[in-house]
Image (cartoon, rainbow, N blue to C red):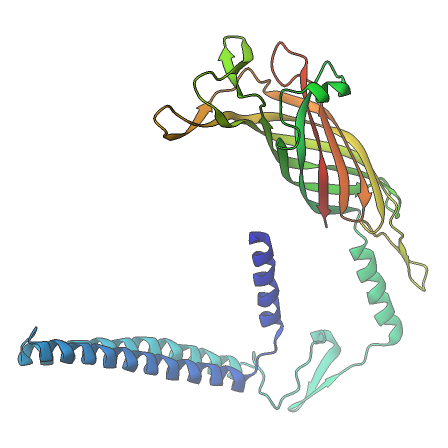
Length: 363
């Protein structure tokens, strides 16, 4: 949501800056601002006078105090009008100076967007040279080549299911101690996508940085218990756990080879523009990173009926360094995503993290 609002602000700012300013329009803006300032200050003074009169009617202040308060309020708002209007008058002086120096045009003057080298003036008349069609086409070609970038960037968001495999056996998911549908992962990152050649191609080198939030929810009223060099799964005896979740956050540096089968655009002059994220994409590679923190969340109701939310801060013997394999296949921006850790999740174990989900690569 914040990213969308930022884009809207930038879009509106660009539109505002792109509008042509004239001397008359700027004068109207300043005049309107002066009127608004004067009206606002007078309205504020009026409300204060009404409030003072009400206090006088109720006997909360004497007549002399009421008059003094009204004079003070009137003096304050007069100074406000003087100061704020003075600022607008200063803007008006600068505007007049800019008009004198030719920095801003009048509404009845012709405004040109051509380069200065293509214009000349005789007397008070300005003439512009027409650029021939060939030069215009050359400029278009230059813009096309400039837009045909070798490297592009993407915002990455992924989410899905998170669990573990024991001894690299996929069938161990069936007997996993963690809930399959309730264990999730979320990933946010930024990637760069570079062609291997200067000319448009289908093969790219993709690299970047991302942050992952991996959640593992235990079954059967169990929790993680730190015990020296080992981390055990133990059943909670006294209370029924409504939440038993281990969350580990990590920072990764992914690297992929990506085949993007998007159809390139060919212009009439034979120029080929590289286009990406328009068709089927397939990526294969890996990642290396490190864990930023681990904590366990426990929720239960104690014997007195009090709801308890407990957060345990510990690394639970997790390996700090993290590396593995990852791959994705999809169409346009969306793809199916799988990620598998090659190093064990916990020290002295053969338990490895696996993630399956949906990934968005937004240009």
